[in-house]
Length: 245
Image (cartoon, rainbow, N blue to C red; front, side, top):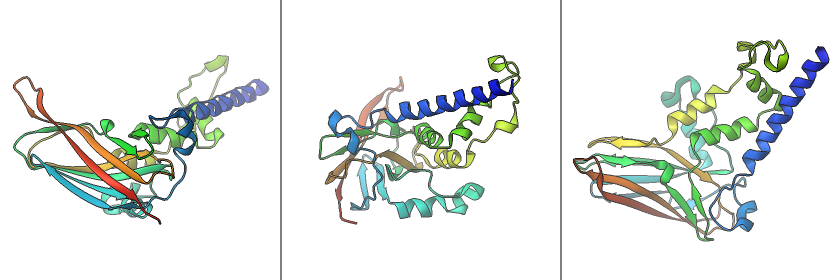
């Protein structure tokens, strides 16, 4: 029985490794396949201008490039995050922006950060990296033994024909980083007149050969009719130049 138990743990450990590989095979940008190896590399970006503001039809959008220093200071702020204040949960392979949207119009608006896109001058388009995906990347980079405990967490006696210990003994999920991600991300939904909503959005790091980046905050809906259908859709385009560190 002891050897069977060891074999079970080894099997689950291998399953964890396979999950890591599958996760990393997902394409990170919409562009030429040959450019994929250059995307998502650890990079230190310096973008100019650092902050931009645009206003359309009473909607004021402020965009701030979130450098590594910005993220360190942001997530270390105990006045915002309390006991969860810690290091940034984002990785050097991700490019992050701080977005503030102020609805100064007389109409409600609807935003969907999942539809925002980043485009580089090399012809590659990037979708936002969601909170769940960032958390999944973090989970995939944890030690195999920790991943195995996470797999066994929900097991019950008789799992694989064995009597496996279950319960809090196996609970080791890093709630801190996920809490930071969930609280700091720009959220989808309606913003009513007078509301100011802010948060972070992230993309995979573009190729280091990129010289300019264009961030589109697209499909912001407003002027809803009686059927709650939007009559107007707004798009805010922000241009950034890649500067030398």
